[in-house]
Amino acid sequence: MLNVRNPQLSNLVARAETLRNEENYYEAADYYLDAINIKNPIAQQELKENKFPDKSPYCLRLHLIRLLCLEKAGERTSSTYEKECRTVIAKYKNPANGKLWRHYIAVYQQLINHYSELHNSPAFNTTLFEILNSEPRYLSFLAYFFINANFSGISFEKLNSVIENYEKSNARKYPGVDYLKLKVLERTNTNAFNSAYDFLRKYPRFEYVREVVDLLENSLDKFNSAQLKRYNNALKVLAIKQPVKNTETISFIINKINKK
Amino acid sequence: MKKAIFLLALIISTNIFAAMEINNPQLSNLVEKAKSLYTTQKYPDAAKSMLTILNMTNETAKTDLSRIDSETGYPLAAIVQAYRMMALFGAGKCASQDFKNECLQSLKKYKQKPGKVVLTPYIQIYQQLLNHYFSLNQSREIENAFFEITDYDPRTLPYFYNFLQKILIKPVDPANDELSHPHYKETLEQIKQAVVKYEKTNPPLNPQIQYFKIKLLEASGEDVFKLSTDYLKKNPATENTKLIVETMRDALDPDKPEQIKQYYKMLTILAIKQPSDKEHIETVSFLLNEKKKLETILPELRNQ
Image (cartoon, rainbow over all chains, first blue to last red):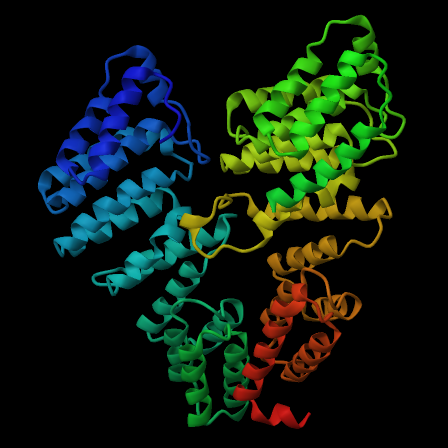
């Protein structure tokens, strides 16, 4: 538990944490709510303090943990859960503007998961674009939502615009976004050979490396001898770059090499 | 990594401590006691002893405490203070606000121009301030402190390699990246400048810094295959051998297939050049496994 100075607040949070550890999620959620709504002005002040590296307020974290408790209690698909996510998002919208707050994006992720569980694609997509239009740098946290949802109902034009804005920002780059770009190329029937080739050079131990190898193979022009040579070299180097213990991936790549 | 820095600081400061002239018998006893508590790792008691020393009001003791050590150019009090911060760190107190405040106050009190010696009590206290920020994952503060101290004295760069380690070893998941920030490129640029300033001081060859120079270029997207090869030729058996071999492997360019042969040869040479002691067994087995993997993928390499 974080260092909470106010004894009343500290007791409420400690009780909530105990209940959460005991898997009494409803009760834990109630205690977190009591902590958030505490009347004591000193405690209220402490709730506004930044206790995290990203400088987000402590209160936001308590809101998030309450939502996680409610989710564990089986409330993820309820309309009250959606409403509460929306309330938290609205409450912190202005202070979160221009910042990268992990707990803020995590509340959004809870809301997106709610829509995903209900197979509500329109709301799922609208919410993803809602957050990315306000802060494109969150794409590094959200790239897999698009991939896992299989791009259902997604406007690729809008998605490309979000990716462009992310790339214009000076944020650290993560493979998830580059992988998303590859998948967009695949879904829009654009030849992805060069992009997949560069991706494998850059991220040889990416978790979905086999999918990228398949994409490279599918984009290969088998009558283009120069490309065929690059493909073979890329596979050899990729196999070498795997740690010795990744025997399955190494075998997968060797099989591909031998197939040619 | 943090522990390694800490131990380095401990060894040097212990020597400095031993060299000081102390006339006041009470102070001398307290220093001996504090040293003993520290070296036997009784850190909470050692920290208390240091505080007692720093609060001494006896005039001869105060004279002793203000006497300048010819080696570092700092008073004994500063050395005791640095020692106390390290003891508090050892006692697990480095995340507290009090620890930070004490670091900042002592840094303010003992700041002076860099002299002949690099690892002074001032720098040791700075290391502890960084340890405080690390313990709280305060990335912005870690960066600011790093750039401030290397700007103050560029020669200190090797003493802050835990910062370099943290930012240059690439994380792949933003959720696990404490340093995922909107100014990554600027940070890399600032580190490059710090390294340039460090090298202008004509430092002795430091394999650790050479390694981080390679990682720095790699993080900036530059080709480091040749650099890694050159490094391994010059330094075949350092503690970084495995890491540099991995860097060299990651830099293999599919458009330059001849690099595979170079890499294979390097593995053979390195395996031979490792000393045959216990410490290097792990490196040797890594090199041999890596070589075997290459032979499985490209059996023709065996004929090289």
